[in-house]
Length: 200
Image 1 (spheres, rainbow, N blue to C red):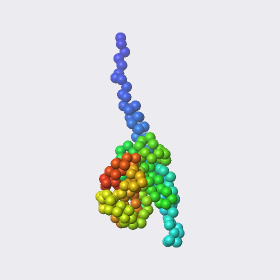
Image 2 (cartoon, rainbow, N blue to C red):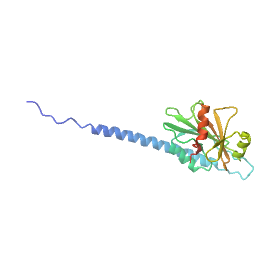
Image 3 (cartoon, rainbow, N blue to C red):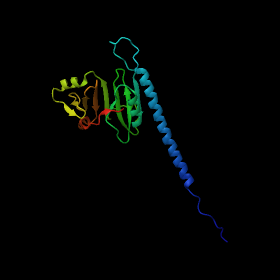
Image 4 (cartoon, rainbow, N blue to C red):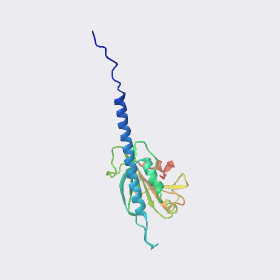
């Protein structure tokens, strides 16, 4: 007489375990990104204080080394600091490398998956923000009427030395923006798109 066996074991517990593991990993990655964003924010805010009473002295920013942030991490940081950090909007499958130099310039570089912050090479879309008093007037003078009107009342000018770079300036903003892309056509398209704006 054959032994009667019950139905096969339910695979659900294994699926649930895998699902929980994946969720735990997602939570860990999200938490790590938030921690990195918080650390950068604290460094940014502390280093941005100008303790000098000499108003004629140019403020010097503490450089921030390249750090990869998610879209939400970049927006959170940009919304918490006084100076604007321009970018070209979100792109699926990319992280956003943020870097600041000692003169207060910031750079947001679009890094595809698998590329770490600080990686060498000039192969990626980069949006730079430079402190620049009366940036719009200065750029219009350089453009000499040959600038490109962009949404928001701004002006764009393709670099005469490097066609892969387009410079932008906006009304009442004391910062100049540079868009770099390996493709000159794409750099110009991004400049005219209206997507270049502060991340915060």
